[in-house]
Image 1 (cartoon, rainbow, N blue to C red):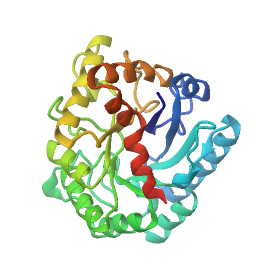
Image 2: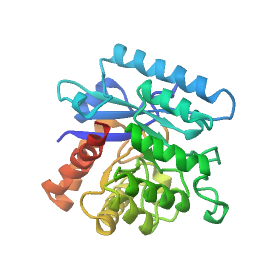
Image 3: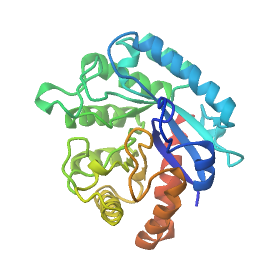
Length: 297
């Protein structure tokens, strides 16, 4: 069974044992891997993200990945790669810079990371501080018009709600590329049931995150397996069978003992099939994400 992974930090990881490589993706049966250009810090954000776009292009040539800028670029002739940005501060509060990122190939952008930026407030900020800024609202509107997916992972509940309102008005999906269910395991990075419903109502998806601290206090292999299936079951129950996808967070978090790298994904897909049946498992693995990626045009 082929799969799509909506989030890895392999593009910006510089050392250590990688969880995502060409050979690991091949072994895992990956159809499309989203590679995040991750930014941290407040200086020269736009120029640094352009450098990461160059790194993405070079990586695709070196590793043989097939870059995707529109839905018709997706093919089973090789491993497809889609460029995303993690930290909307990369646009530095400028719609012109946002448009330049789109022209550079960025097709999904996480609106915030762990700190407030020009777009809005992250999960570390309570919703009474705000959600989207006035620029953030204009930014999400423009993303919908361009065909760049707004990603609400790392955002607070109010940011998610206000983003969903805009996306519904624009008839455009949003995603939480690497998030789990707060009702299963409490963490501010996990989604409320209301947030899951809002993403589903926009035709979007939630990419299940493999980071053990977002899943359970039981960090054993069996505990993590049970937790992943519990999060999957809850998200399906709350949002329906069209809302769940995969967003591993490989190379952005320590290896999960149950799913340590991309080559291990098939064991999870097998467990999903045993638990939910082949049709639902295939939706989670790739079909739900493919439906959302059709919005790229």
